[in-house]
Image (cartoon, rainbow, N blue to C red; front, side, top):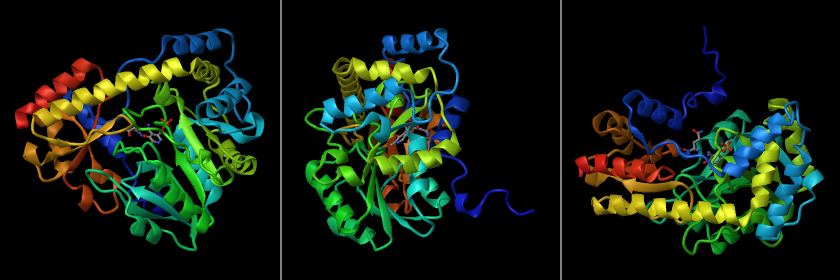
Length: 385
Ligand code: PMP
Ligand code: GLN
């Protein structure tokens, strides 16, 4: 019999995160691979979910999301970034950012359309572009500064470009795009009359002087931008799978049209809890930022102290290292060996690339872990240095 899997999904069978987390579990390795925190988020948010269950909010929520979360998202965008949204028409709650990404691509792309993405890219982007029958065109960000090559970016656009799928702050590089870079992307999007779908799940994870600038806040961009975020990152509840997407009313309705046949709705009692978290505001975001910045420095200083060439990322959960000084010239081989050999899991950057060559020696380490876990990981990595 022929493969039961449609050709459009061939090559996407296993995610690199699942592969590396499986190795971590099998070997009992310290998991610096998959990006999830190993401690719970704010107790008030967890309590709000328990309360919502006790209060009986356990049936289907409304299709667009519970009203208090829709308005909490709109108020968050206004207070943090000055973006004006009508909560009843311009916000949609989704099953994590993942569903928002899938539904927006499936809603906007005709078969044969092109989507511009930065490479390395988050894995679900290309899988969903392919499932939609569209094609991705890339602009490669290169280690160690991951800056944009303006000519390469322009060359990725064409008359078939339907949308630019941006991730800022950027997984896996930890890059935070600055205003000039965003302006360049936006100018091209306007020139080629493309949508910008911007995945900003790490919006509250920027360090030092780095500032998160939402695309939708830039001049003349609000009417062609769909902005995605998620509670998983902001409140350290990756298992809750509550995300949201906001933008022009007509486009949000288009995304909802697809979304209602993917999951219909999800996470009834978690939605009011996330609304509560967003209302807690600056205190929660500041605490998250300072705790993660310390963890970033703990991991990066530790690796640098071992003589490893490593980035000090301006955002996200992730630092990128070159494994040459650890005795490897191939990051994927390092990630396949390290769990069994030294008890540490990481993720190869090649898993986020079409052409693995620019990332061959690179691996991603997640620092969203308890200090003693980071220290133990470093102690184990030291065996190779
Ligand atoms: N986008 C990026 C860039 C991510 O790193 C992740 C994973 N955390 C997601 C989307 C998926 O988010 P969610 O768990 O809310 O679906
Ligand atoms: N976003 C997380 C990461 O980049 C993992 C999510 C997943 O496993 N799909 O590690």
